[in-house]
Length: 244
Image 1 (cartoon, rainbow, N blue to C red):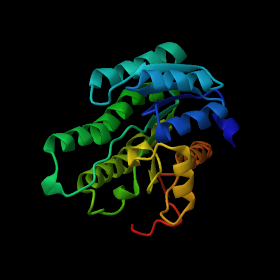
Image 2: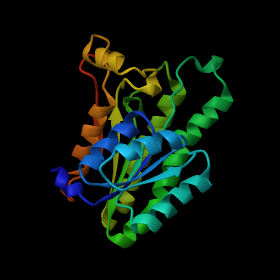
Image 3: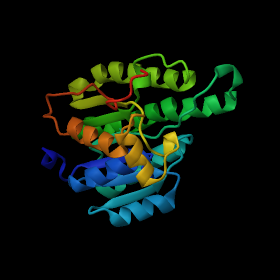
């Protein structure tokens, strides 16, 4: 089914590592053209050099609205269209709310919510003009339940879920699908895992973690459904994650 993606133009935010990097690899193999967006230009350029497709590397800080607009404008200039927006960039803060830093909370809400809204808003006009497209947001199991050890992160993902469920209905008639990819615990840099052997060990062990590649396979599945099928929410959990 992945041949349905051949030639599609995809913007990936948070593309320099983790789920974003894994999805870039999977979508490149499916024949997509990619805009890789994040703050770490060196990492993205190294990734782009490995991928068997045309890539545009754009430095984009998700706390800077001008960067988000520039990311979309440069994609349209380079490729002429945006078929898929994968609003993946996000940060994670766990812990007791009373002990936390309100400035850090504000940054999380800006990246996890405001940037998602701006990414979607920036691509919807061109998608409408082109007859449709896909907007996929990296959400979390935390958007479906109230995880008490991560109140701010959980709140941000609940907001994302509401956004997906409401805007989906507003743009469905324009041929635009709005979808949520909601993983549980993922062994990647967001969770403090950097070593490939450690990631392999924890994803197969009793602790129960997904890998970023697992999430990439799920994304490809969502995007390759026929146009009349929308996977509104895809919740993917490690088999051994039983604390949620």
